[in-house]
Image (tube, rainbow, N blue to C red; front, side, top):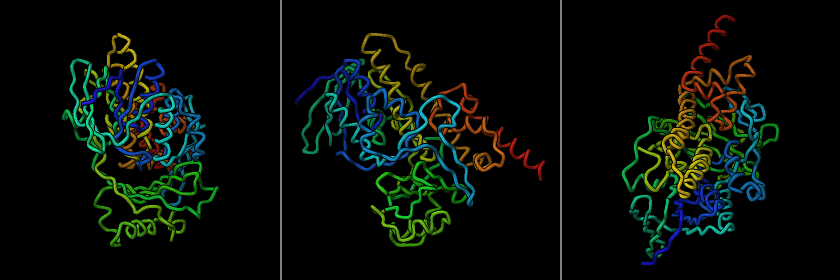
Length: 414
């Protein structure tokens, strides 16, 4: 069997894998990427957050992504019963990037992977990891291509950025359920001929359809728009129609904010389903490996946290891998797990507050305090590691206190 050697093996050519690969390669180590799919391939998670731009910049991807002319994104708009709450990233509390992109992920991910290849990082597509054996921090990974050819890769370290594939957690029985309830996403891309510049396309729109059910609207620069419903699986059982397209059209027609805009629009592909997507793992690292991106934990699409957690975790992990390969001591628990859980848990608090209705009260309140809104805006921009922000530091209680304050204030003015 053919055997190759590398300093670092990266599993997965998505944003998590490519960011880590690029940063490690720049430090002078040999890196190679194996990817199960053929690129470009469809994947959800199309609305980025400003915090991920810092990781993309360090990895050297910004210029290549700019060349694609993707839709620039400057904020997020929330809609409920015709009432609108806008968050503009330029108003955020935390210093940092004030914009990002909305991207068809197939094109975006391929751009990152192509840039890695230009940097001299080999990328093997349609290559599946079938087994990994560790000897201390060294490893031998067995892979198989689509023709059934097997080979082995010897590495000093492995970065698992395999996303939903969850290679190492599945091989070593590390998966564990998330504490979030199961939810379902039902979505497609449409030819958005009725889009208006007054409304969009410079931000994502999130519509409260009914309690616990929401809709994403993500415009792209090519004139198409991603539209999806998210909620408890039981909600979708009441939709009319015998085909996925008829069912999604029925749902779109039932939402006043979208009914006219999406009437008779062309669907780019038959609507797809993603469900029971929230998942976690027992640990984020081990001797000779680190998990990044969705492999660690995927929460919910509502605040577009996926690519940000993927890129920031890979950016953080890459520096620790470099230190390890250079013979330095790394406290993976403190320097990686605790840091990443700060971000994950902050997003988790906001996801839970969204579905519980706490954020309804906050987002659609009258006479909002600009200073508080700017702090919440920073979270929506992905700056969930800035503990100078009270709405990050005290994420588990700050939103509840704010909701109570708003309700008490409104009760006095009635």
